[in-house]
Image 1 (cartoon, helix red, strand yellow):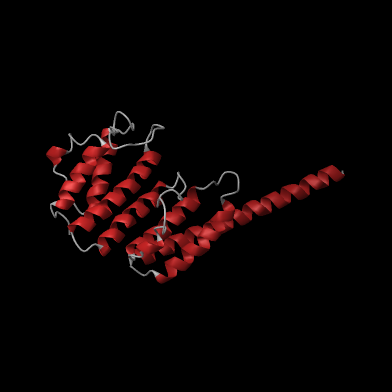
Image 2 (cartoon, rainbow, N blue to C red):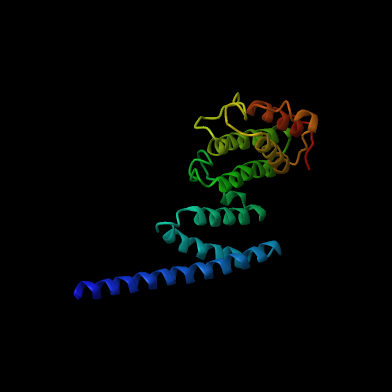
Length: 217
């Protein structure tokens, strides 16, 4: 009899916890949806506070079975995007060391934002073409770290790595990489040059040539 009562009590507690988690998740979803609307309207004050609160909740929730780090990674990437669009690059880039090294390997979205911030920060401080290209080189090193985590094969990307043969990218992923680089560096790689852009070095060469030619904003 006592075992049956204990079972009922445990079951009730479990149901209560599950209900609390579902309610909290619903509230968090509403806050995130409101945050997205505010960010779209370029109203950054409230989203900043909301994302801080949501991040604290998800730090605890990420330890629960079945939830994992996915939602927490998403919120941290959103916070970084908020800083990025406010041009607060110094808040995204560590003062020393590899800017990507401290970011979890499974948070590729955050890694990309930080890699972009490396270039934007360097370019904002650049006084001539030489310093712009130096900022580009620093950003390229950061992107190499990102490529390691998006590669379909467990290898360390190098400048000679073939995007398809070595990193396992398909043709659509290669186009996605090129399109992202065009958007981030404000350049346009001619379509006739895309088929020849196979290795990391060739991608870097294309980007560097266009930046050096002044094909930027």
